Each structure stands twice: as C-alpha cells, then as structure tokens.
Image: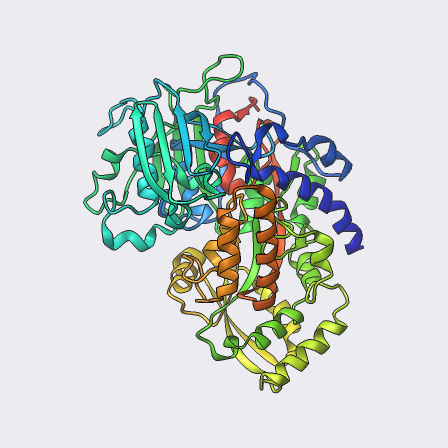
Length: 570
C-alpha cells in the first residue's frame, strides 16, 4: 500500500518542485522562465488538485479570515527565523521579486519589473516600477519607492554595519544568503546593480523569499536600536489595523495600492484581512467547520472528516519545502562518533513516520531528495540507501554492529527536545531506538519561546523539528550543514561536506551545480549531521466562496494570496 502511495505522489511532487528553481533570467546555473512546466495535467493524473486558476474578481470587498498557529515577531521580516513569524508583516510589504503561486512558483516581478544577470554570474541589474508609493503614514508619508530603498533592504539583510547596530548582527541569520554581495549601485531612481564577490547560484532565490521584503530606512530608524518594535510600513496591498499578541492581527485595504489586475482593475479585491490565533488544531478545525475562518492547513485524517461533512469545501495539496529531522548536538559525547549517528540513522523507519505521523501525506526525504529535484539524486536512489529501505532487517543488524564497535552495545540515555503536540513522534522514535538499547527522554517545549532560543544556544542533546527552507537546495546545505552555518545548531563540522556545498553555491551552470549538490547529499548521508526523516505535503482546505487561493505552503504564500484573493458574498 505504501509503495503504491509513493508511486502516485512522486510524479506530482517532482513536477511541482522542479518549477521552484525557475527564474526570469539569470546565469546558466538557473533555469529560464520559459522552461516552466504546467502542473495541471500531471496533478490530475496523480489524483491531486492543481493550483487555483487566477481569475479577475467577480465581486469586491469583504473580509478574508486566516488562521495562525504561532505569533512570532509580527514587525520585522528580516529578523525572524520562522515562517510563521514573518507572516504578519507580509501583507504590508512587497519584495524586489517574488514567487508566483499561480505559475508553478516561478520567480516573478514585484517591485522590480525586470532583471538581468551577466553571463559570468557576477552582476545582477534590476529595473524598478515607477510611481510606486509607500503607505501614507509617518515618517514616509506616501513618498515614492526608489532604488535606494531596495539597496537599503539588501544591505540590512547582509547585516551591513552601516545600517544595523552591531550587537544585533547575530539575529540577522539570513546574512549568509546575501554574503556574496560585493557592492550595490543605484545609477538612477529606478535601477539597482548588485555586484557579487563570486558567482552565487541561489542569489535570485534569496531575493525572492518572503523574508526579503522591502521596508523604508527612515521607518526602521525611528527605533533607537534599528530593530522594528511596532507597526509596519511598506508598499503592500494592506496597512496594519490592529495587533494583539496570541489573538489577532488585522489589516485594512491600501486604497492607493499600485498594482492592477489583468483587466486593469485595482488590487487588492478584499477590504479587510484578519489573522486569528489558534492554540491547537482541533480549535482551528472547529472554527473552519463553523465558517469562522476561510482557509486552514489540515492533516490527512481531519481533511477526510471535514470534507465528508462539508462536500463543497475545496482541498489543495502541494509538497512542502521542509524536512522533519532529528538533529544531533556534537557536544554530546556519543554523537561525536559517526558510528553512533549512523546506527540511529539506520534504526529510524522513515516509512512508519511518513505513514503514521505524516498520515500517508508525506514521503521519505534526504537533505536534497526529493524536495529540490533540480539538484537532487533520484528518488529510487534514495529509497535504496541504508536507512531508507522498507525492509529494516539489514539496517538493524548493521546498526547493532556499529553500536558495539563504538562501545555503546549496552545503549545510553539521551534527552530529546521536541516542540509541543509531538507525543506521537516521541513514542514512535522511542520504539524505533529500543533495538539499540537507547532510552529517549523527551522534553516538550514551546517552539517560539523555548525551542528556538535553546536550539540557537546549543542547549540540547537531540532535537526534533521540521525546518522550512527556501525554494533552493542551498538553503539547507549551507545554513544547516556547513561549519559555522547560522542554523548549524549542533555545531557539526566536516571539511569535505563544506567543500562540496561551496562548489554547488558558486557553479555557473545547472549541470555542474547539480553534480556538486548530489555529491553533497551523498556526503551528508555518510557523516550524518541530522537524521533526515520525511517531507510532508502541505494540505489546505478552502471554503467554497474563496477564489484565487493559490496552492502553496500557507505560511509562505499569504502575502501573495491576499493580493489577488476575492470572496463571494455568503
């Protein structure tokens, strides 16, 4: 049964995610936009729904109500380390470029109407829209967006000392994504030229991410620490209305928004937006059933139940660019031995995790395969590797041998840090580690309040979490797996892996980059900084009166959904 499920999922998984590396134009290490694939036919053949077809609204006005599972810092998209955290500033801002949730996640224009990369990959030139205005709020008071604003945003993302306070530099974790920038020129109000120190293949992907939104300098510098502590100002389709922590974030339509729909009509279509906090899944599902919210992410079991009772509700599924994983901390002595790490890697049954925890809406995953298919090894290759094989007999025999060789034949006790609502994850891992005589003691903590600061400080032995990556494989390879990477919380270090990752970052053609990314994945599965487990599908339910809902990971697609979404009167 499981094999059949994998075979039905993989084609759509690969089709959709191949499009994630698409760009409008750039060096040969990046796919041109005209090569984009259409997913509708493949989605139907796999039995899964394709994305909403973008349409001009038949009705305007109304309120779109959206759930939130965690309230992070709602104000500063450049600082937050979590997808949930940055959601709250997104409706207020625009990016230089963005991902198009209605066109296979291709990189698309936003504030930049066009861009061009030099053949050697060292220079990117952006041409901006003219006449775009910031919100009519002090201290910007509706002034025009110009190229200097885009330059300021990129400098801030690099944690450049000219625009941030030095003591806050560690909080700018995405500086790694922009560290290749040598200089930025603004020859006129609507042109920005970015010069890189070396070719950096994921550059456009980094610029297109929701956490790279443009904010005005004078607004940031209202605050003595140069970190935004209240409100938000941007060029986006909505302006902030109210924010109450652990309760609600609401927004009003920006009447002077600069974008039009394909018929020349003013965007956005809706008048009001509300993000409502829900502490648990069941409360959120109850609110959706009661029609108190218009969209919600959902598990497989809940989806079947709700759709049985609500046949007009629409279900949407796409692969999620994340990997559920167990992260080793190299300060814990047993994990300093690769034999122990490998034994635990072999003992974990990924098929069980995908079926039981992923509710059969997930697939086993490595660091690259199958999440980033442009760069990945084949799925057949991954499923044939030790630790990924469905029959665990050989894996467990090898795991026990390695534990004996490492001097841990009698096992050991390890403390695991888990986020809340992960009881099933804990019990499943405990069962899978029993053959190795490893006793897992679990500590469940609040993600934003405890997991993030503890992980950042390296205050754990083993941690379990999902990590949401950008749409490029480098977002996991560099930040999480290389020596000194900003999210290498376990302080893992391997010179050979570092070298392979650097080679894929600086490759100037797709074939060369794929080669090094595949080798990096193989090396990661040898030295094992993580136990990579599975990647889930993002499944959402949409009320029948909501249109242009797209079909992307909810937390990352919100700013793009609200720009074009419209609701029927109901």
